[in-house]
Image (cartoon, rainbow, N blue to C red; front, side, top):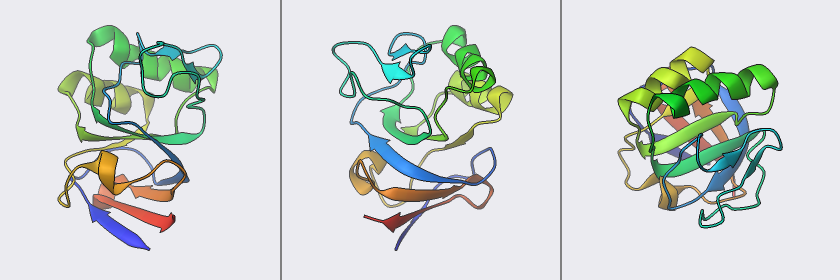
Length: 136
C-alpha cells in the first residue's frame, strides 16, 4: 500500500482502476462521450475506455465547454470515477464540482503520472487530500 498526499480535493471517496497518461486532458476534444473512449488519435490513451476509471493526467486543457461536459458525462452514466492531475485548472475544477466528480491535484510526492501506474487499484479520498495505491 502506497499513500500519496495531495491538495484537498472535491467529491466523495471512490475506488477503482487507474488509467494514466503523461498527457493533458480535455473532455471536449479528447473523448467520444457517447462510447466512453478516448477518441483523439494523438492522445496517449486513444481507443481506451475511461468509463469507471480513475484518470491520471498532467493537467487539464480547454475552457468552459470542457467543464460542463463533465456534468453531461456524469448525467449520462458514462464517466470516470475520478480525475487526478499534477495541476488542475480552475475551470475544470468548477466542472468537477458541478458534476460532483472526485478530483484532486498538487501531489506532494512528485509527478502523479509517474507515481500511479495504469492498472493500479486506487482509493481516492478527496476531503482528506489522500490517494492510496491499494494494489499494484
